[in-house]
Amino acid sequence: SSEANFNKADGSLLFVDARATLMFDKGKPYEILLIIRDQTERRKMFESLKQSEEKFRKFFQLAPEAYYIRRKNGDFIDVNDEVVNLTGFSREELLKSGLRDLNIIPLDSREEILSKTEKMQVDGEVKKTILTINNREGYQLKADVRSILTRLNGEEVILGMIRKHEKIDG
Image (tube, rainbow, N blue to C red; front, side):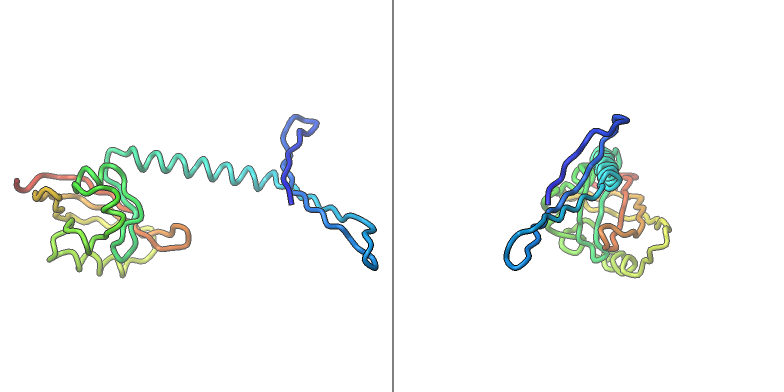
């Protein structure tokens, strides 16, 4: 199997996938079966998807608000730099641990939040919550948290945004 591209008469590109098979009769090769498939539309869709993913990645990482993607059980899949700034935990610590392991949300409300997200359905509804967030350095702040349950790579995940309201103490 090999891929190739050709310039068509109108100047556009044609992407093809070619496979060749040697056919035998009584142990002797007698012909080559060549199958060529036009992969132009598939290639265009792949490139478009790649560009879209790159735009989302840039938006996610450079957003002025704290954005995260996490599993329903509280494990982080991805966080942007603002989540790191807000919590004081490194990106690696956040991705290695989850809401149950880190003291980001006070213990008295942590299990309630996780229980509610376990029950969320994929219906497009944005959930709004005011939470207390613990920073690694020991101070607390009130935050407006908005989240939505969606599917990402076949898995139900929470996309969330945290907007800081005010510092409580420290």
